[in-house]
Image (cartoon, rainbow, N blue to C red; front, side):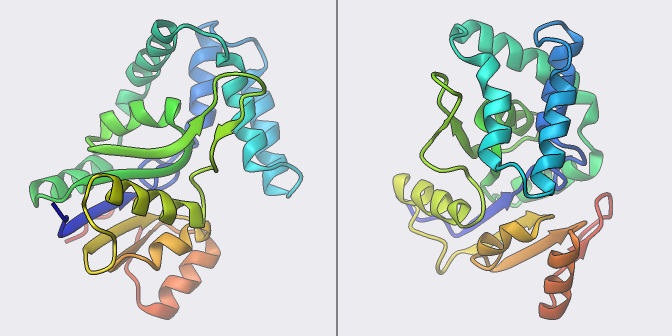
Length: 222
């Protein structure tokens, strides 16, 4: 049955005010599940990414490689430990935002470039119904299945998910997408209600020029 309403959410620096990959490294390095220096290596790769010297795949591989070959129950235990550590970090603002959409009967979907292994525990904490994320290939060099869920690929992933579940497509549907990043412009332009959440400079300028709502994280929104 075709959906009439849909609420989509970015994760890092939108529903949460931190980098989920960084948090994953910190939690598991502190517990001894990741080797010393894991957090520092991830931070260095993030800085290289900002400078244009590393790619999204480099970041993903850094996170996924240590998980290659781990049994499923071990991976689930890592996710459970991460969830327990992150539960106090979920902001009342984000929980209220998702809950208001849920109460209105809107399916709530996380759409993030973050690896599914990291994103799913956070999606559950936030009360989201579904997760569309970068799918890890837990073998070899820690590559991804298909393309990272980033940029225009977010639109393709949402449309594929809707089609798979016989929900039609975004066209003609009342939809929201909340994001902080200019890289999410393709999906923001594909929904009827784009919302910039504490946006980066380019997205802020774009949102202002087009009259899109701009919300600073923590603000109430009707």
